[in-house]
Length: 264
Image 1 (cartoon, rainbow, N blue to C red):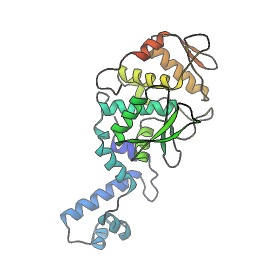
Image 2 (cartoon, helix red, strand yellow; image 1 turned 45 degrees about the vertical axis):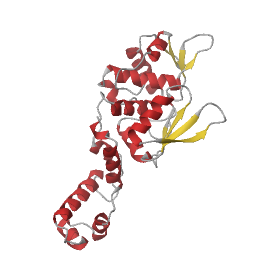
Image 3 (cartoon, one colour; image 1 turned 120 degrees about the vertical axis):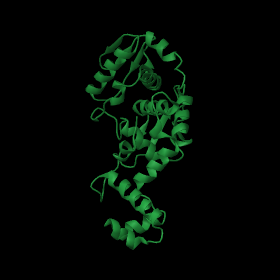
Image 4 (cartoon, rainbow, N blue to C red; image 1 turned 180 degrees about the horizontal axis):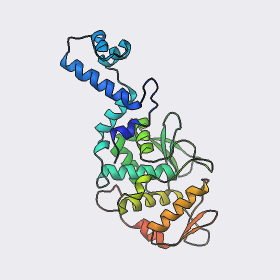
């Protein structure tokens, strides 16, 4: 579902040809030093042709950011996740929540989720499953809306969500945004769960009717894609004009309990 390389691919390589090179170098150096503990940083750096300062830091507890993120991911079972287990449902829930009302910082990978319209328990449970806990960032204008953020591993989790297809940076009519690729092949319950979270957070009741309306400042291509996805997955009529309108049958689908193994 998500691999170590998928996560590391979100990093800027900087002084490396590829972001994964930092992971491989770190692992080779530490594996070699475990077998040859008597050798110092100078000897080890000569063995691999690496800068001594880099090797010295690694042999004294330092780690590349990529390795720190991988360690955090392993701690919470990210790389063993499947669409059949809690971790897989948690990832899907949080990707949908980013699309619906969350945000991932374009540069620092800060991660926040806006709550207040339902599925709060599902989203907070997902953050706890993948990052160990969350904190309330702020109440918004005194309304029954608030933001939460992971208490730890915020950037690694944000990067994992980006690797799965969550948008990063500003989401507006000029943004380059599309639905996650995994929705094309994921099990039906994952696709339904994605829409359940998305519509519960994002849709509003149309005036004088019990239709659901999605109004977003997004590129037309994305709204067309989203409407087509809803039409494919929901037992309801979907209308696309300047917004997306979904007929009342969708409400029953949204209220239906999720299958065993999910976070709902």
